[in-house]
Length: 272
Picture 1 (spheres, rainbow, N blue to C red):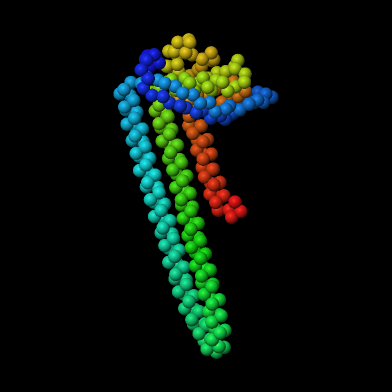
Picture 2: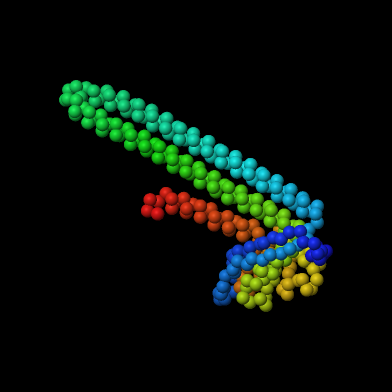
């Protein structure tokens, strides 16, 4: 492929591969001795000017759409939260007026009959009850407001990973050298490499088959119709390592969402 032999370098990208998960182990008696470790590598690959320009425009459009959707999500959440707070305040005010009227109806005759001091104490007690109930309404509104902001955070995380997946998939489609480096790093994960077989999509297998023997990996590489462009599965005696892009992004997304939830729980816990 001429894509790998041009001398002009247009850009450099860095890809981090997190530890793939172990899906199955064909030999249960053998235990996986170590987990994969994050591998970072850099690569430089020439691209056609028109392809690069098209990709930059596509990525810019995705980012612009993401900013628009994020702004809409935040605006909607703020509007709903403010409405909830307003309703809670209105209900607390109505409750306060109602109870105040009851206080006047009940305490005034009591004050006249038993004296001003006792009536005043009764009024103070009633007023305190009103304030407590009003505070409870406001606390409830604040909790609802916090929940709305948490929803916004989670939606923004999912939106960010959705954009990242599109950008990375687009890069993999137009830059096979990225996937070739992924293959090299994934192949280092199993301890026993004699039985390693790498699975690629039909599209990726086509360009891989055209590589020179020096560029190819010293392992069996097969086409897998169940995989999409950019996907990689490694099969060996230790099991199957899933290095598909969407699998790694989903795992990282779940981790970040859980971190957000734990962080909010820690803030809400008075002992933390």
